[in-house]
Image 1 (cartoon, rainbow, N blue to C red):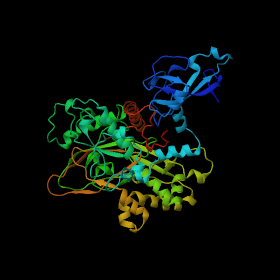
Image 2: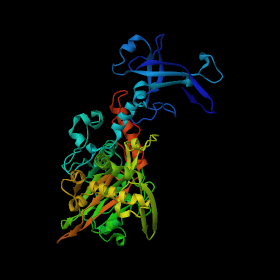
Image 3: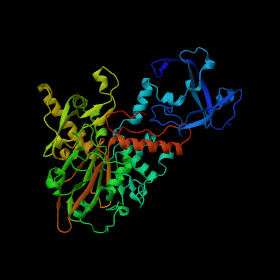
Image 4: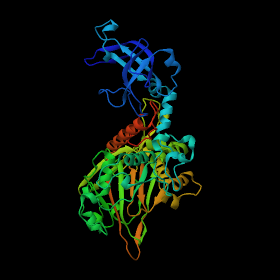
Length: 513
């Protein structure tokens, strides 16, 4: 074993042994022990236990010993084993000349979690792959919440979890995330991020129409035209999105950083600005890197609006189910790229990618590869162009496409499918559907979830339907969540206790657990 230092010289292991660390010992060295700074509590998603940029708050001062008293107490709280490695220094053969910089400490339990044997790799995958048990449903919470043996969260992380509403989603109060002066409240922000990355979606409730601290406008009975005239600093949905992503909105080139979904908006250059139904889809699938989070703030839903329910379905979980019941269709959608397009005045975009993407692990066996973790789904029927496949693949592609469409779109299921068809039954059970109320922000992961809308019309009386939306970048948002998760772990968990597993976010790569 070796590591490469600057300049290309290799340093080889001179000595390696297990030492035992205690946080309860006095910082006094003696013949049986020594004091050193070592990596502190590590996260499940920590890719390396050492602070490569120097000491920081996750490092701790600890007393080490190979004394039998420490060894016998290794299972006691705050006592744990570390692998201590001493590296030889090029040009020096005498160990006494080796400086402290040539020593490394590795948490043994971390090494075991990061092991690359088949059993360890499978265990990590079980902690991150999105399956139907994780998906939101037509009614009730995700199935894993009903099976204690499947719950991955540590109680110390979720002890203050906001209440899960009758609609199956967790509702987080806006005032618990941003105070009246616009300051971010870290506990509430963490609960929102944790919920969205676990369940795929959440609702922020009691959201004001306008950000009170940034405007002198009266907030009562603002018209849709007046709301549209507000800038992003005055809109709560924008402040919420910025809090989730570290300070920035994204993907504003085509529709602006803020977009308003209401009938007649922008001369209806997108079907979203009509009253027609929207099939389940991801936004901006023709981008190389589509948006991460999408936020839709309901600022008006008139009593006369008939229909217009919002829908969600977990695409990663649905792809997992497709592999179980239609493996040939699954394989086709992994292998055959689709074409996603955006062609209109001011836009000419195309991108080709498969509908389902699997993690790469170096396997050369195509059959084994089909069992790899699902790391992304790309689905947006309104924005699909010519398939551009070889003639021999066309029929099979459309058969597979039809299978996946039936498992994703309950509208197709209702109209064309047998009630005993297992694909259609999945769509019926796992499609979440509800009409939003004013003051609610639907927050969902655009990489994992497909969203849609039922067609609507206006009866007599007040009939305005107006949603204000925006996007965040997936990488910025994941980073914000993981930083917050690390802070929560360091505050609330025991030394060395593994953090809750993070489910795959759908951005085309495995989460390193």
